[in-house]
Length: 68
Image (cartoon, rainbow, N blue to C red; front, side, top):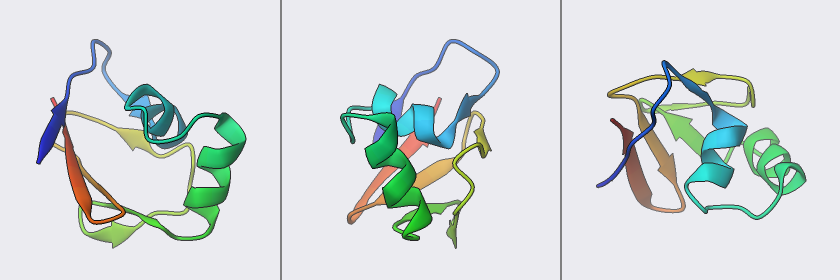
């Protein structure tokens, strides 16, 4: 599991995907989220504005990322 450190209280899911280098554009992030390809804490998440906070686990393409 890869830990991703943020310096704010939270980060939105679409911003996280860009910040972590998993996508190149906001449009790409939006499409991936809308297709149901992202899970947050074990549940599929389709809200690109979902606020991620410390200890949240994001799953994408067989990889897990933890917000720290």
